[in-house]
Length: 188
Image 1: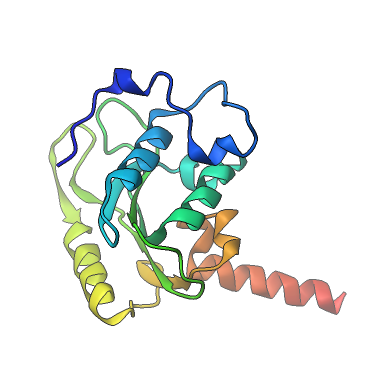
Image 2 (image 1 turned 30 degrees about the vertical axis):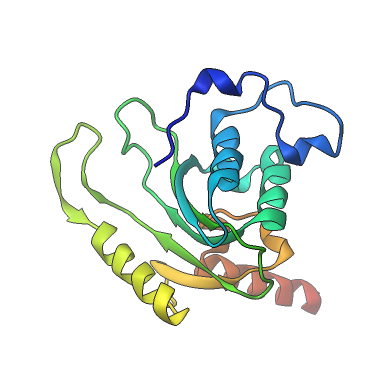
């Protein structure tokens, strides 16, 4: 277990910003925690974070994703539905990393949870995708294979994931559409 005092992060400079010799003016606590937890993990240790989806998709956070690829292995990204947290509507994802060098081509598990069994007010909902995605992820960890649909799939780990690591950008149906558009452009 890791216990931390947020006040200790006030003067903390992230390793991935040191190469620029500039401390960002505004750093989000999630960025600090990801680096600190990776630092605290033993080699081969694994950590999971619930992060705002912007960590995985925005240009502003590209340097964090690049730092992750240089210092850890991204094992899984699981998209959660918007509105599941009572105090915010921010879209979040589960990010699972391990403390080992990223291996190009190693599969990354991607999953989409559409319902977590409760609504935003905490009332029970009929559908809960969490057990299914958990089973898919458990199977993936032992076989490195996942179903290939818009619920769970794998993508090869490449440097291209630094640009976009969010589930929506990597949906199999999105990738098929992109390929179709590329073919169309080549025909023109």
